[in-house]
Length: 229
Image (cartoon, rainbow, N blue to C red; front, side, top):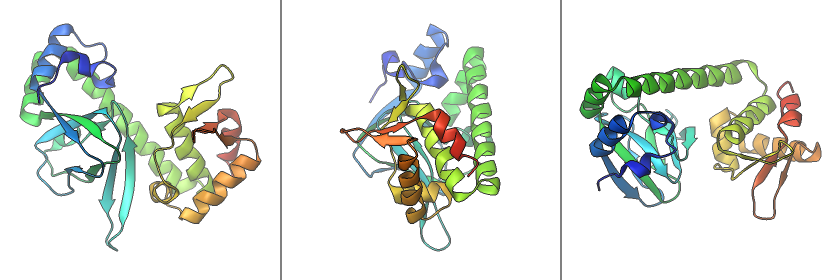
């Protein structure tokens, strides 16, 4: 399905680029709708395109040698999938699967190469996204190497809240937590039981609470105190 320029509004990679660049991206983008639990691509497949989440939620994961799945990221609107493969040309390093019904935009790597050559503002935005991806990866390495199990869970929750949460007048952040306790444990390298215990401790300390609609409300200041635990 063709992509209209309006569908790209709010996608960080395309925010602030010229109208000409936005129109060119829209023309090069193929929009696809996926039902829940459908694969966008699988680990090891040739990476011929990069993708971005227009609507919905996508889980990125790898298979472990023991036959389990290791969740790496959960992305919502604006999240980029396999954009690094545009540079290195390697196969997809992980699998991407929808968590809910989702709309995904896809651009062939060959077309993206032409776009960044013709539109310098798009090339600059792409470099910014690479830098953010590097900072994110460095943060993950730090968490896994130096933080306690509790600190890793808290760090992941804060990251989700700052990226996807809605802030109220008191500075509290509300998110629709996109992961089960098991998936959050996979993401942070801890057991499901540790995630459940940590959330209970955070609730008792007043750092988090749940709304009647099931949203998770975080107090960033109190959460940061738990990063050192």
